[in-house]
Length: 153
Image 1 (tube, rainbow, N blue to C red):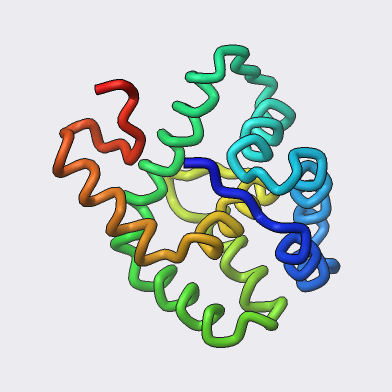
Image 2: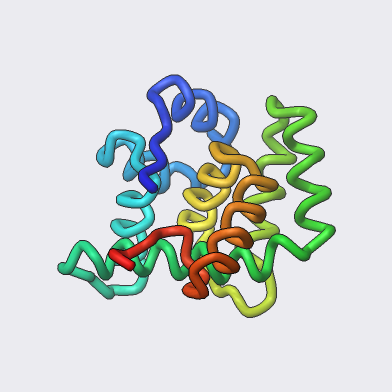
């Protein structure tokens, strides 16, 4: 599933996170990728890790795998869910949005770069945390793959 932020959405979040340096890198790449979160993730991943996946199916797989791991970590984490809910009640709060990014970056077992975490949080905000958690749970129960993407099955 391609999830894309519109120019006004990007500008709104960029304004909120103007004082959070890692977000500037994420927004520059988001702009290059015309708001495509998956492609921005791929580019940041390659830049931060030095790993480049030339095969488009592998890039999508890396994005999907990352989201699957995050679902396992985030969907049962009441602290993160509470932070997310607090931000959605007050979407103009830069400290709450930055807090979400920092929380994602520092989750145990997930060594994510803050710029990559910014892209992921923007994705979660775009689709909603409850949809993110429920969509995967349904998909993994129905096809056994654990992926919301039906790769030709």
